[in-house]
Image (cartoon, rainbow, N blue to C red; front, top):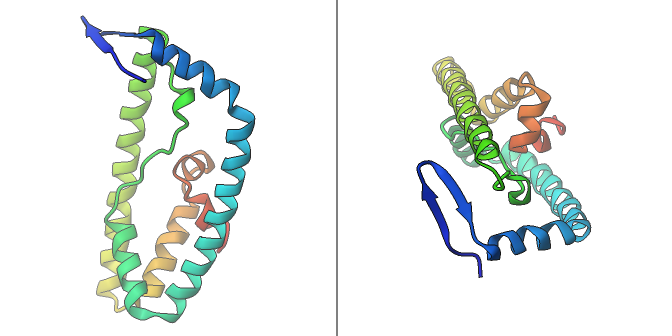
Length: 156
């Protein structure tokens, strides 16, 4: 049971069940890493199938281009890596999250501008999607990895 999180004057304290959970997460890391590898392989295969469908189905391509342009990226994290043990660690992590969200908002704004420009110029859904992925390739490798955009950008 993971419970009993309390906050006092912006300082977060965690009960023993959460500390026990963190220790279990660390102990299970080798199994977790193997699962991550399997999940990543499955995600790559899914991305390949999605790209093929985008090229062959214009309605799906338009839908995916729109979704990709108008959806903000999120950083995918391993909860075992979140520094819950100290106020300083949590403050630094919170600042990291705010910085990432600001970057993701900027990226989404640029994608929307590209989408609208290509749409106005008469590009097809597949062309727009490919243009968005080409834009994604210009983002830092760290950003692509954090959001798993690299699964798509490494395929095209």
